Length: 276
Image 1: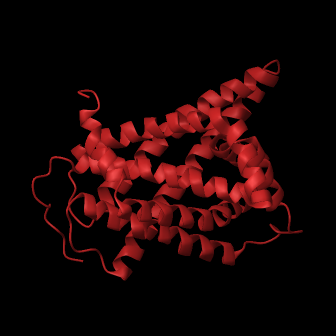
Image 2: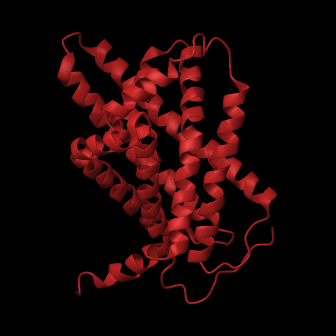
């Protein structure tokens, strides 16, 4: 009980109905923005003729959701003939619109953690969300580019580095590049999104810990994938991969929100609210 005592407030926080509403709202918008985001990434990779970067995008999807889901995603991306012959402004608009929807419930949830009563106006929320979208999207693109450059370096540095050696080295480098990027994205969300002045010193360690927990959660999901995936395929048929994205996003959002609750714990009074 003494070991569980620090986690008891977080467990009670997870039991609140509002938190589940926030989590499912975030997960639904992740599903809506997921495919447009991939289309924009793949278009970018193909427009510059960089096949290795495109394969790095698929590898990231496999790392997140498993090989079978990645295969479904790859099939869906190549479903429409000549899909990438020109840039799709529709995909960009859908990405911006749905990705903004991720940060709306997240701002409300983070404001609740910090005791902030007044939320940003809709317009201000959209502007802040837009900035976070470009920041987090650029970080994700940076992680993919670093992974692609590393794989090309391995292939060019030594012709004998092939097969599993290159694959495992690429995976290791991808993890080393992705972890700091994830932690920096979490820091920006925790620091900027609440409608109040959040001390950066309080959210830096939380962003690091939550990044590590999310990575551990990813490995836990991979461990239970075989049984879990079969169950979902039976229950949901061809829609199972969309259900996986929603469920994984919901659980990940609960971890992110728990980090916000942890960071705000001990604040005796609401922080000063900026005027927006």
